Image (tube, rainbow, N blue to C red; front, side, top):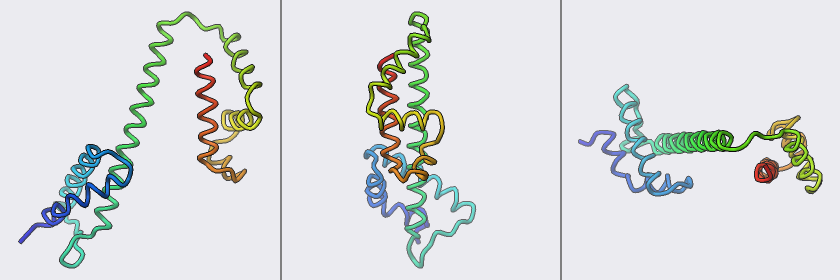
Length: 160
């Protein structure tokens, strides 16, 4: 008779395809599915019952895959942020001292030349509201606010 983990493994291709639908590459999907086997194995050893009749509780497997996927993306985001911070530190160490008055004037001039909507969204998010609070207050799509803020911030970084 098969163990529960062997029953889970019988649908390996299904788990890979499900994970790829979350928006990751085949290699990432294989890593995530591998993590899922490890997590499920640990939980089965602790007494978790994921049976659904004679089969496996697919919803539990799906939630485990989705959680592992989100954790992977979160780690990648943090690693990218650390990488960008390190790149910025290297830039600061290798460049000449920055005259902040000149830099501030450049930023203010660039903001004045931008479309009023972009400038207003940037200032609201930078100084008053989080993107979520502004979205709830105005009804403007979260993604629209985020993309506008990110675009303006990128333009100002390139300027400096």
